[in-house]
Image 1 (cartoon, rainbow, N blue to C red):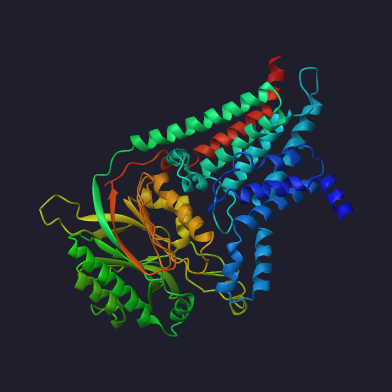
Image 2 (image 1 turned 45 degrees about the vertical axis):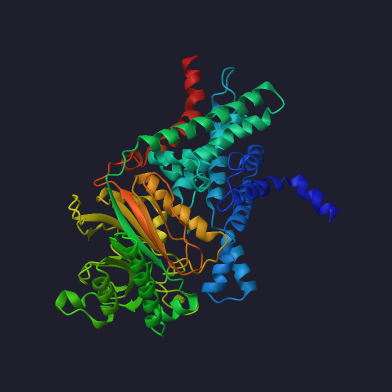
Amino acid sequence: MRSFLLRFKASRYYLPILSGIFIGTSYIPLPPWASAFAFVPLFIFWSSETSLKRVIIAGWLTQFTLTLLGFNWVAHTIHEFGHMAWPISIAGLFAFCSFANIDVVIAGFLQHLLIKWISQIRSKHASNTLSTELSPLGRIAIMALLMALVKGSFDTIFHWSYGYPLLWVHLPMAQLAELIGFQGLSSLVILANIGSFQFWQHRHSQAGRKMLGTLLVLFVLANLAGYGLKRSWPAANAELNVLITQANIGNLEKAQAEKGLGFQQFITDKYSTLTRNAKFSADQEKIRVDFALWPETAFPYRVDQRWWLKTPNYPFITEPIRNLAKELEIALITGGYGTSPVDGEIANTLFVIEKSGVIQPDPYFKTHLLAFGEYIPFGNIWPQLYDWIPASHFSIGPGPQVKDLPLTPYADGTPRAANVKFGPQICYEGLFAFFARDLADQGAEIFVNVTNDSWYGTWQQPYQHLYNTLGRAIEFRRPLIRATNTGITTVVTALGEVMDFSPLHAEWAHVYQVPYRQSPSQTIYQKYPWLMTTLLIITLLWICIRPTLRKRQT
């Protein structure tokens, strides 16, 4: 054992593992305590390494460790969703950790080749005024810039970034997402590691203390800028009240209902009763409710909406939700199982039932499906995969679509818009900024996200998924209303103010007062989503060519 430890220490592989520990323990639901220096050990290893093989191994060790610590809920999901024994579930977690954040490995590979190429080019033009080697700062800057670029352009199954923990701990600098998005904030977090590296290298000198002071000043300025952005955004000029119902349906009941094997009436009655009771309480307190919201696949029947496009008679299967809307005199938005008009297959769907009981004829079909949950990669090529792997097989929707929801006029005659334009997101789709941007470009005034996180336990995933979704509100300055089956249900305003949380795995209903702007303005990030990426690329090119330009000038 002692000889093994000595060899391990000599190999210095403890450095990338240390980076993985720093990153994995700085992600939601833990505070980002090490984010500003988490990559420094890995960068130190890479900066002195000449072997491409060892560079790749180090990157893999970092990504494996950070995934194991930050996303270990995957084992619970495999056990719960796939009904696998715990040893198999843990093996599945290890397999997931082996590739889930492979962007770290890709960044290491690219930085090694780029730095080697720069050294070769410079060696051909070596002179008294041009060193053949990059400075330590230049090497680390290239590593950080490539890490940020690859992270921003390489999608994994669960789209996350190093910027979301800033919102999790409510730092004002999270408001900078209005300018550069949370992926841009993620890049800033990675770039902060350049300063931390400089501090570590010169920690015993005046230069190190100056660098530490510079980092602290930049941190304060970033938070002041975020606070100023929040204060400068125009105030809401409209509001609506939404009643959200969380029925806490168990996984067994959900799975059986999806297959049409039972529990449909039980689930529908549970949601209806909770909604009816909450509406009654709101009426008693004289709180107006504009619409009720149920989460993803809450209405457990498969509905072929093509029927009511051909005949004025609605299918009897939708009577419970149509009658509930008429009884309570409020619109109802609910997730359910629809039928794709393209291929006739089952689709994860969002239905809008107006207070008259009329179901809007063009429901929203989920576009971005979750791999191994709603489809199996390459399942269209090898259909037998669906016999081997327990996963649903949903049809893909046509893309983001803004919907109109009619609003009831105020009883006192106060002017009010005839409807509100809302952008539907079903579960996983809330993670993607490009999806929310399309909705904002179509005129969405609010985002409505419906989710079912019942497969993921209570430890990490519910909080990670929540804040990764809430980030869209700040990026595009639209409130986001989130309804879940088992929690966490909440609302976040356009200013990033998070309202009351629902409890996890409990029956619950609540009326939220949601302020919003009619015809809201575009944010910088909405208009120029490429801004941060462009700045990173320009900076990287400048570092690469600056010495050559300097030589020509001399």
